[in-house]
Amino acid sequence: VQLQASGGGLVQSGGSLRLSCVGSGFILDYYAIGWFRQAPGKEREGISCISDRDGSIYYAESVKGRFDIARDNVRNTVFLQMNSLKPEDSAVYYCAATLGAMCSKNHSIYDYWGQGTLVTVSS
Image 1 (cartoon, one colour):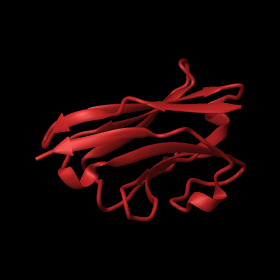
Image 2 (cartoon, helix red, strand yellow):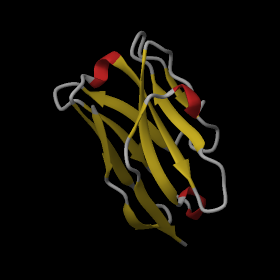
Image 3 (cartoon, one colour):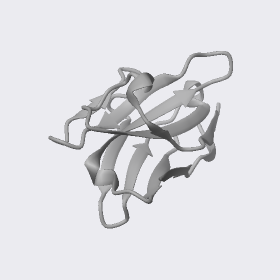
Image 4 (cartoon, one colour):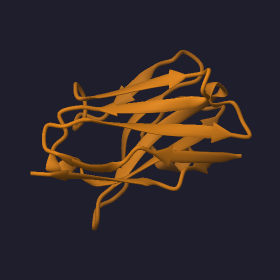
């Protein structure tokens, strides 16, 4: 069971990136998937998640209206579309999966983690 997060990079303020979280060895549609980020010196922050059961979605206030989470079950992938990026969005972004639980911003409930992808937003 593996998660692979990718799609990070360097972008100017106001730009967009799309992060991908690809599952191998398991079907992501059966799992709640969360996106987290951690900037240097800061705690890991749950920014978005999508449940497996009812498809309910959560966004942190800091990204609401700018980020969009979506599943692509054909590609066994969960995307995080990030628009109107700001310098304060700069961080390492992680995806995580949990089976049998609702979507949550609480990182402790997640069983599997991707390796992280770096997002840097220049001003």
